[in-house]
Amino acid sequence: MAFYYDEPSHTFSEYLLVPGYSDENSIPSNVSLKTPLVKFKKGETPAITMNIPLISAIMQSVSNDTMAIALAKEGGVSFIYGSQTVENQAAMVRRVKSYKAGFVASDSNLSPEDTLEDVLNLKEKTGHSTVAITSDGTAEGKLVGIVSSRDYRVSRMEPSLKVKEFMTPLKDLVTAPEGTSLKEANDIIWEHKLNSLPIVDKNGCLVSFVFRKDYSSHKENPNELLDSSKRFVVGAGINTRDYETRVPALVEAGADVLCIDSSEGYSVWQKRTIEWIRSKYGDKVKVGAGNVVDSEGFRFLAEAGADFIKIGIGGGSICITRETKGIGRGQATAVIDVAKARDEYYKETGVYIPICSDGGIVHDYHITLALAMGCDFCMLGRYFARFDESPTQKVLVNGNYMKEYWGEGSARARNWQRYDLGGAQKLSFVEGVDSYVPYAGPLHDTVSVTLSKIKHTFCNCGALTIPELQKKAKLTLVSSVSIVEGGAHDVVVKDTNNHN
Ligand code: IMP
Image (cartoon, rainbow, N blue to C red; front, top):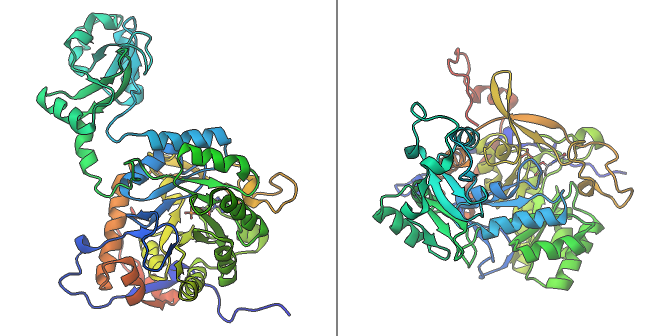
């Protein structure tokens, strides 16, 4: 006879936290959201600790190099999507690792023979007012001047006027050589009252710019997550098919951590993938695995050697796995069950394997609930897809700006490797949808609000760290009637914007 669980499985919206005692230390600025990303032995420090408990989903519509840089600035980690060629994925990882905070590759470049009209068109396109003038009009060409808004007056000049007639020529520019540190660059900007400082190589070719306005933004990111060489930490997704070529390329490109991306992780394929990585790299290459939804799945991947384990089947916003295949489990119940298994495993072996709640985060407080239920961090797709930094198009739909967001199992992504069970190498049916999500501006703004809400809830529960919350949290299931009570009710709401 089949096994039946005693209890129905629940999701986050069915739970609430009951406040605990808060003393005078329970203030948001005292809360630390630091959390381990990879397994560690009792008494030792994990090889990677994140400054915030958020990672971005391994999806074409979420995690590219731009997203990875933006999230690492906040203290989290992106896992660059694996449903692309090995070369392209490795190139994205390389771009994150070679990104030097404060040094920006020029995206607005023209040649001296171009015109004022070209300058205006470019400014319209990029939104940037500093244009590098190089001999061949490329970002790496020989620098011959700069055009900024101080160099022209549209009302007094002909659109056909050549750039060379009004640019600030190289002889009047302050530049700095390649190898200049950010601190030195900022000192030069300050001394010479510049808005931008071009960095040039020994042949006089443009390398990058340092902008005055970025100085403050750099200081605004005290949480940024860096490796020992002060480069941003970045993850990358892999699959159970082409790991023998993909993993070496990603490791070579500098990926700090990998994760097997699969809709269902309790499988021999994941075990084989981890075994191959261990045989080639030992413990040096960190690899997460998943997804599982119960203690058996956890134990299997823990014993297979996973560095962290992801939880979640069917709860993703774009996911129709439960509808198409009838598999899955309420996300809250899955997290609670796996957290118990993780704690037992830790007691038995002295090895702590971080667990990640993946998918289904709708409200910010769901993150706090997931943490309280025992997970160490959350993976989010929809949440990050809404920001400027996600790889997808911003489009106007019925007067509102939206970003596109599609599942890895959708006909658009056709990531068959994610759903592979060792059969035909194709997506037999779709398990995800193609959708829009409301555009939400720059990542930094929303992530700051989310973290602030999480920290406030921590304080309400009298906890200043994630482990403390896990110890102190009091969770209650709520009835469907009390969920109605939880929203604004019996009033006519003036501003219907909800701030998820
Ligand atoms: P979200 O944060 O609720 O949008 O869920 C994101 C998660 O959904 C990802 O991290 C994946 O685990 C999962 N996912 C991504 N694409 C698909 C799909 O096409 N079908 C089912 N699940 C998906």
